[in-house]
Image (cartoon, rainbow, N blue to C red; front, side):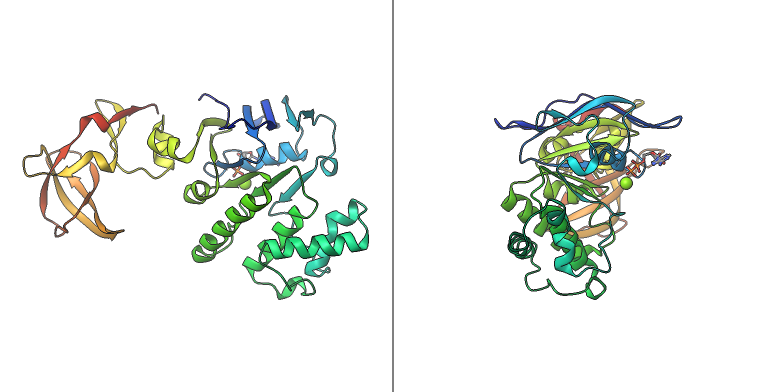
Length: 330
Ligand code: ADP
Ligand code: MG
């Protein structure tokens, strides 16, 4: 849909994509993407598998040629600039840590390429290892690291040369849920402490919402919607976005889809909606109830919250606040 500028809050544009299109032969993986990223912003790019997230990062990194469009970083066109001269920190799955270098050797890599002196390198390596919570791990070998530790070292390696832009492609994808949540919090702190401009790609909307000031949703190579996490959650413009973000109660009414937020439904003995309770989950102090609308031929799924727990199989009446219900494009 529209591509309004990111929440700049008076900051300069650091990264600008204008009409960026990338094709693999016949396949258009990224189509006319416009994106404006403010300095020091953390932008999350989300969308289902195959929607073009990695292609977008690879295009910015200069690893895929543009079919059309322009990319500027820090006000300078990247046209013709090779990857290693783009001033980027990359944390991509295919850029594994160097197995034959120690932790410190990995983190030092970009600094060596920049021709820093040995003492500058030693100091900076210590600084970034401390930043990612890996103080004292410098002499460890890569094989001796856990999955979470390896990701911290990869982050330190990407950050060591103080890049203009940090790009992470599903950096937590291979980790279990608990570790992911912990590292999400740690990443957030690192972004804040360094003030780095970052693009974080993930297929997980909760990770994106926890990390980013600005979220871009890609759908089949196009930007479907972008905005702050709160904007996107409160005002998804399409069924695709509402469902991708995990909103329940996306209903079809007279052939159109509408979003009925959980808050629009209240248990009420005089209510007009009758549901049969299918599932009751205690969640953050209230009961999250999943039911099916009992009076319809096609049983519509209805999710709502209640202070009291009904039994599975009970029938309940709900009142609907129609002012909260709004239409969605497909
Ligand atoms: P995501 O990272 O969102 O999962 P990708 O950017 O990897 O998506 O891929 C976008 C689309 O481009 C997909 O349909 C994918 O199959 C296709 N694609 C990606 N890389 C190549 C390639 N090297 N050659 C041909 N098609 C590709
Ligand atoms: Mg990908």
